[in-house]
Length: 95
Image 1 (cartoon, rainbow, N blue to C red):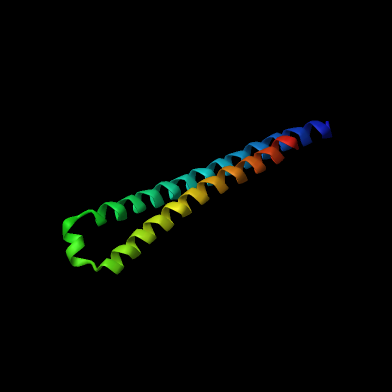
Image 2: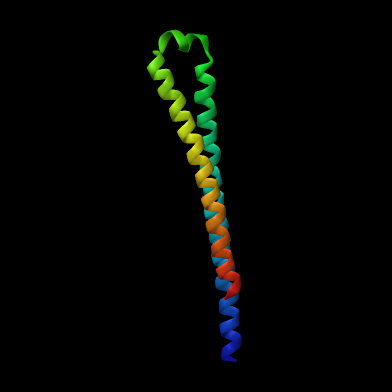
């Protein structure tokens, strides 16, 4: 009887932990999309003729660097999230 209860508890815990991983991955994916959108907006803003007259070249270069950094951060976050989720799920599946 006790081993049945342990098995049921383990299954419930596994399901809850899996749902938590899904939630964290979903939130991370939302951040990735937001970072990429912001990077895209910055890139698009640099092509506006008005911006080229209002914003100095050095600030335009800073915007370009910021856009690139945001894109790099989104790529890193996306890959790290996938890797970590896989490792966590592998551990959960082995228990």
